[in-house]
Length: 339
Image (cartoon, rainbow, N blue to C red; front, side):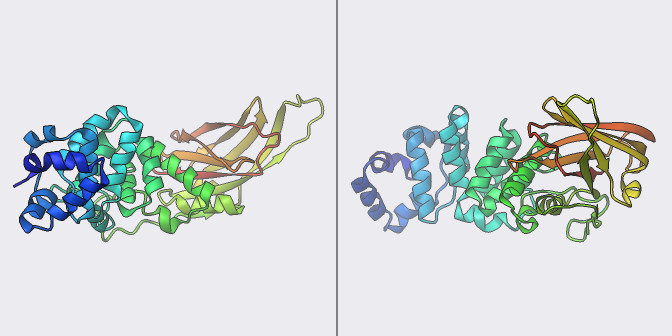
């Protein structure tokens, strides 16, 4: 049974006065008081005894004594934090740094069952229902705990509506900081192969051709969901009389690219008017509906991406990214993802 109604006045004072916090700490030396304040579930009717800031303090205080997070308190704080960025950050910190949540987060592939600890269940619901998924992902990357990685796996689950945007954010974050695949693999939930169990499913090896440069190579290592990755070289073409603001570029695909991308491929590119434009025509080898995502790194080492969808048979794909560097890139990376 919770002792919140009895201890509410002391908790309110302890939340803002260190001396009263010492008194509260002394009170839980009694086993019955410890059980009633640190271990007991909080009743919905008890939420009115404390203000929001006091509940946040109390949840962290009993967490520090080994107590569990409480479903009702998390739900109460979550509703109140909808319109406060700092409150959302503090609440996520409370949950993503919770020892009990941490202990189990690493062993769960990305789905919290009904009997999971309150922290994991709250993170799963929060990742699926809060409107700003990118904000959650950025906070998770800052906390960098197993519970934070669990949250990222929820955000990148195939059924999540923002999965592609979050994957792109994580890809850029990893590339800019040169974070290896041994870490990034813990951030992403990959689709389960049809008819296979996760424990036994071995993803097919990613075929990689022509990727050059350390940063693009690191990018390629992180694209574990791709079925093929092709690097292409770009070389400016000097043409007399051409507009200096528009530079034609020769795009060269490596040997073997016809097998992975398109037969009889015709590729060309141009840089100008603040954009890099690439066209590739051919009879496409990936299944119709497959995505081809272009990655390129500019002089500030930012990773720029765009994508196109493979048509049936022969067709032309166009890729356009913002490009403000005076010189075109020397290489790009094309990653193929199954539909």
